[in-house]
Amino acid sequence: MHKDIICKHSDFFVASCSKAWAEGKEGTVKLPTVESATVKLYIHWAYTGNINLDVLDYGPGLASNYGQTAQLFRLYIAADMFLDRIMKNKAMDTILQRMNKRTFAVDWHSANLVWDNTTGDSPLRSAILHWSAATTTRDGFSKAVLSLRPAFVIDLAGTLLDLKGEAAFAKYPTYERRSQYHDHGVDNVKCSEKCSTQMT
Ligand SMILES: [Zn+2]
Image (cartoon, rainbow, N blue to C red; front, side, top):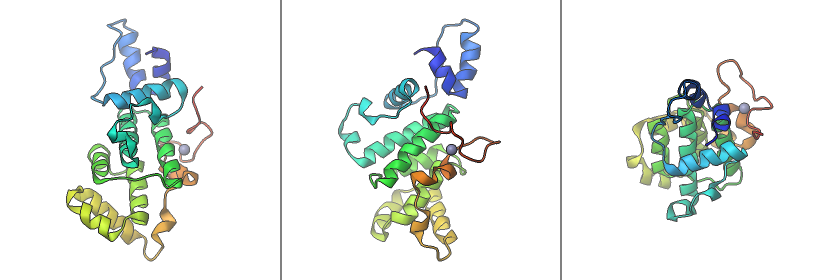
């Protein structure tokens, strides 16, 4: 991949680029383990500014909304790992747009993936919790609960308790509310123009 494109996007890569490439070493950067499908999505985004699940082979895993959610979560987690805020926010926007269209669905595997790979203040956790509080049925929850990470169950209980009589749907995550689910770094608390616009 072309180093300028990748270096532009990610602090992780910038750090790697400035050391490995500037010193003219082997010209390769060692990445943490990330699934090949995620790398494909990441590179496609780096070149086009778009997240497009169609670049992946549509195996049985991707045919369902659940499988697509898993890919988006993996992409978000990778962006988190690469310290790439723009990618994180773009992945979040894609997730929120699917929530808007009601084409978002999450199973316990994907929820566990997030709780295993993010920290307590992760905006992705918030989005999932708000979505779950608004949409999860008692029946669905009963079936999944024994497979879910205890931390998720505790977080969901906390989210529901915090509602204090407010309708759970009031917190339903939407694209219009994306600002609260973005990572804006330490100094910036609002969405800026560049926040999740396409890279040129
Ligand atoms: Zn933003």
